[in-house]
Length: 262
Image (tube, rainbow, N blue to C red; front, side):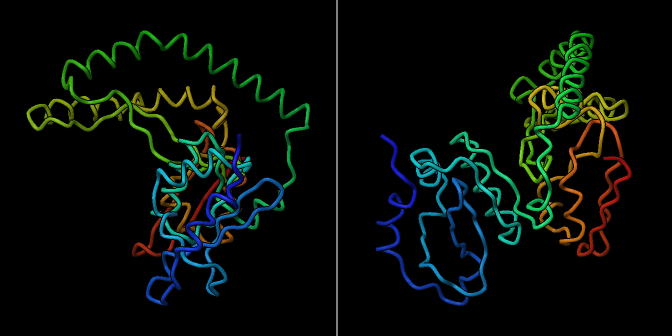
């Protein structure tokens, strides 16, 4: 039996306390709209502070037992809170998006025959490429395990896909967890990075539909959050393995997004 998330948080609301101005940076408001959960930051506090919303396991259980089909998060909440919600949504198998005004206005291309044809073509090409390079990927995996058997083969990091959808980009792990093998790992990492071999697992992201073969390079979550509202329009585009995506920083405060392909 499913329990609506609005009911699930009632005990928390009853036991909550008024948010002080010093804690306002940790505050978020929740709104339900057409089976979507909007997680927003607000300067004017309209809901009680719910401490349990800072807990991954609680968020996961609430999302699992709710009727929410999609979660949109305000990037103004900051990287730490967005990442917390993203991890909880992943555990609950709920799609999660960065909420931007530009993304809300974009028309859905899913009904377009051309869009589906392009998607199918890219999936077929990625499948063939993955089949061809699979021996090389296996060889790289054996080399990595031989150098550092304790480390996992892959590393996953949150990136922003089409229309602000968050997903975890897959790459070969190039950092060692064992100091004794760090030098050899660095040599292998340099070699893999020189030829872009550490990015081969991203073909799995293409097969999953997170990105395409052609288009802009996907933006990291930490960079996307710091983009200006105008630059966030680029997050509507579907990222790909090719294309150009640059994020330049001036004194760590000003970011510029340069995309020449869509």
